[in-house]
Length: 180
Image (cartoon, rainbow, N blue to C red; front, side, top):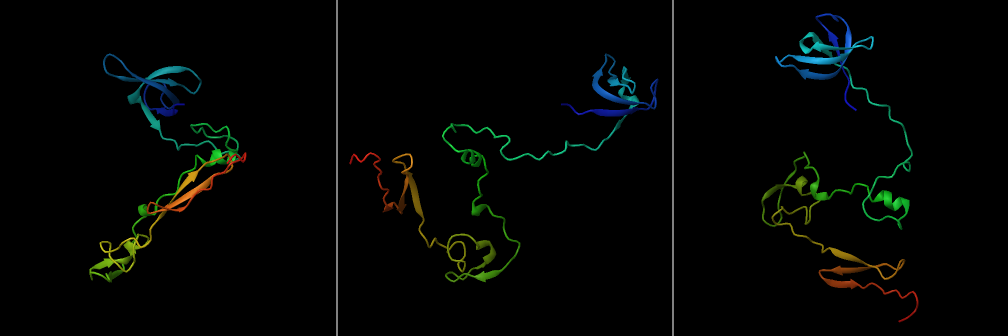
């Protein structure tokens, strides 16, 4: 739906009247004419130079409260075996990583324990390594573990956990019919 433009006629036959502009065109001699609806419903072509646009505050439609289950957003892929809650959660925004956090405005200068360089300890907060070391000296103190989901049956999924490529927990195999 296009925006409705209202104007007041300044000069000419319809001076002082309010009009609603539907279209603007240019004739052969370069004059701009506006196709308008007058107050009484009649149509007229009026020169744009004879009109003064009336600025109106945009009026948005009132927000109608709706239940969350009224309309489901379209999500690509099959969702036939998923629950309604699972399908809705697929469309949620994901949590951002901690690395994209805003830089603190506080400044708290310290000296590095290993090299002695002065650094801002507030910038180091939340990053890997000790807070008492600068960024160049800080090393990761904990090795992260990785998990891989192993599906052996519809309800028999388990997780296989590895740390530095070494298997820490092996997923149990599930035999629903006892054929092992």
